[in-house]
Amino acid sequence: MAAIVYLVPPLAIAQPADGAFINIYSARHYPTDEALYADFTKTTGIKINRIDSDDAGILTRLKAEGAASPADVILLVDAARLWRAEVEGLFLPVKSKLLEEVIPDNLRAKRADNGGIPWFGLSTRARVIVYDKFKLQKSDVDTYEKLADPKLKGKLCIRSGSHPYNLSLFGAMTEHMGPQQTEIWLKGVVNNLARNPAGGDTDQIKGVASGECAVAVSNTYYLARLMRSFNPVDKALVEKVSIVFPNQASWGTHLNIAGGAVAKNSKNQINALKFLEYLASASAQNHFANGNNEWPAVKGMSFDNPALKAMSGGVFKSEVLPVSAIGMNQIKVQQMLDRVGFK
Ligand code: FE
Figure 1 (cartoon, helix red, strand yellow):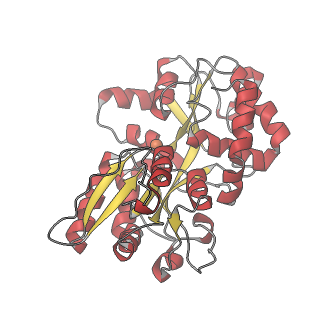
Figure 2 (cartoon, rainbow, N blue to C red):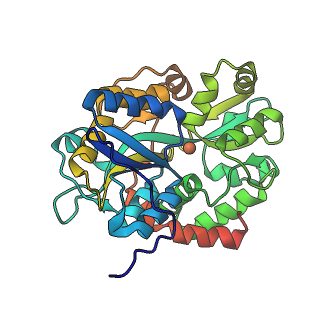
Figure 3 (cartoon, rainbow, N blue to C red):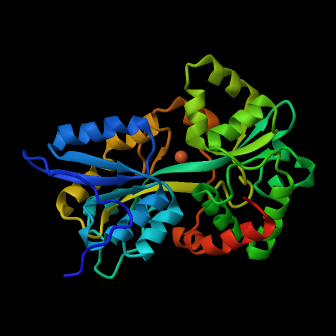
């Protein structure tokens, strides 16, 4: 028999002697999620072993492990990566009346040949524009297109173009404007950079607050985290910036999702599905909203997060695009980034 060759070390996960467990591969790098996992174990008695990595790392690992993979549940934090994993056959499409009932059509994968759904969006985040309210007007930065306006030369901070959050935003822009216009736009964005892209979204917000840039791009939960912080440094930072939900007069603000799936080779499929269904429960959805400042994916779910309400004024128009379209544009977008020199 051929030996299994691991490109990454196999997991040393021991089965608890006293019962049920699931192995989760998670790209959710949010410490507040610990409470979520503990609550699941308390409610169901099912123990959780968790491996944290980024989206790309998880996909690589699953492919390397193949049928021997111990993964039961996969949690990813980007729409295009969810799509990619689905296309590569890493998910087990599952039938869940509950999940199909509560998760809107546009936030989950299309039905697979076996009648199941390969993955479900569980929370959403908007990619918004943050600006220095003393240097710019809202009307200077109220669309993504304006980030390429020569008026903003040397004023823009944004993380790496190749980061999944940006690849998905640019993939969506490609849908809205077409590839030619998008490449011209990306060139304009690069021309406006205040510095070489580095760090995460919070670093870009800090860049605005420090005066290094006048405008930046960030996911909403990073902003909400600062808004809810008791740290005086964070409070001072928030004082200096304003937030705009772009493209309210056109296609709407770019929305990304975090979601979950049962792993293709799961040996604990029933418990894995139980965990996904738990993530759609009122308590878990409220946890996403209050713990990590994401919008619940479940229809009509009420939540109480003053920062999310304050920044959006309650409601905002978000783009409606099939996730598969964003996913399919990834390679095209990466090629454009290479051509325009967007690191
Ligand atoms: Fe993040």
